[in-house]
Image 1 (cartoon, rainbow, N blue to C red):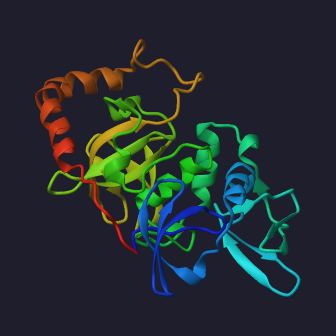
Image 2 (image 1 turned 135 degrees about the vertical axis):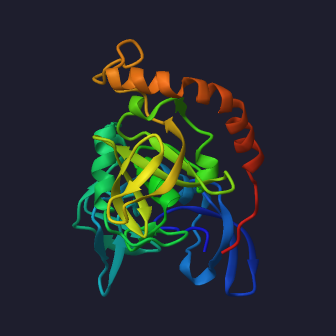
Image 3 (image 1 turned 180 degrees about the vertical axis):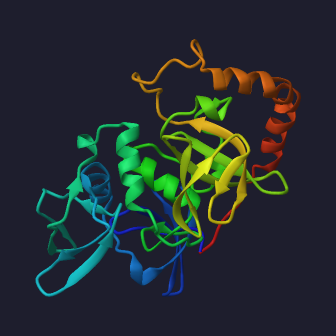
Amino acid sequence: MVSQLLFGELLEILETKGRQWTKIRCQWDNLVGWVATNQIKTITPSEFETYNQHFAYNLELMQAVMANDFFMPITLGAQLPNFDGIRFELENTNYTFSGQAIFPNDITVTADFILKIARRYLHAPYLAGGRSPFGIDDSGLVQMLFKFIGVRLPREAAQQVYLGQTIDFIEEAQSADLAFFEDRQGRIAHVGILLPNAQILHAFGKVRIDTIDHFGIYNMEEARYTHKLRVVKRILPKSKSAPNQAEQPSEMVKNQIELFKYEVERTKYAIHFSILLCFQVRTSYF
């Protein structure tokens, strides 16, 4: 499994294979893969456009949508197509939804909003390819968080790293910046979202909060570093309320800059070159 589609998300049908499998392109991130044919519903082009423009996000960890004679559970981040605040219709079936939902136009794009959503995923089990509170991976978690505010991120951390503004030092990072980590071969293999007070929320075994510094993620339970930091990227605009650390750096930042200035300059070209070589475009299949 390379990814998941949640209830109400849109896709494009590319190919069918027998009665069981359909090759699709996910509308949000253009990921191509195979899904079980009986799990998707065909809609018209006009319905596709309507559902793409008019929907609400489910904010409940898990909540049921109700029809006349059955319930259907949906998870955090699922989309309610053409939702009017109470009900929506699919294939001539009327559904009602009594949980908490939010329309994209009502979302204030701030780090605080993203982190409030992020904390709802806490302790969700790790699942490679997952995108729901019942199983999620590191890049899927980050992708879902930014999807709420309308920012399209690729599915894999190795592709997400090319977006945003590079932050030179971890001490200059702010809430909701993304931290990327490399494996032993120097490839981008992990991503997490930064919290205040030198903490990071990421999916490693489960969605958890750990401490982070310029070396990487430190796991207090295991008393060791579990991930080596490569780079920090800023996707959101810099908060107006955040201090201008470039003009008035703290004493800690000054010391950090002085200590690592030579090393950063020496390795900057090699790091960027290795990122380019490690970038892969590949076709993925379910």
